Length: 109
View 1 (tube, one colour):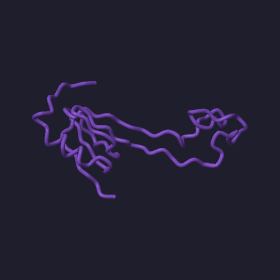
View 2 (cartoon, one colour):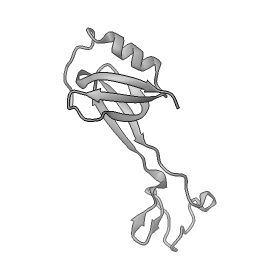
View 3 (tube, rainbow, N blue to C red):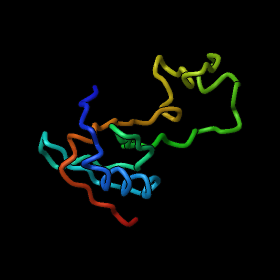
View 4 (cartoon, rainbow, N blue to C red):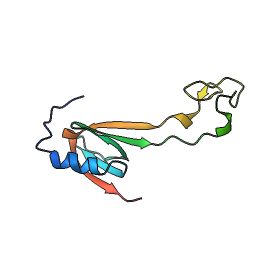
């Protein structure tokens, strides 16, 4: 989704976000609601990307490429145990168009 917001008028927001990549941020958008909280992963001229859920650590990091917990072979998507994927290889991210941002707050951890 591109909004063609010509962020030249919003250049201070872009520059501020770029200086703070890697920090925890709360972004409020025109859609309303409580805001999106996550780790600011990247910023370009039109969008910012937040990592909202970090993947969990593997339950058995020494079994890389092994048979996993149920005898089935691992694949690039994680262990297939009981028909379910091991969530250790997944996280969640959201891409927010900058023209939809109404405010942002950097949180200290």
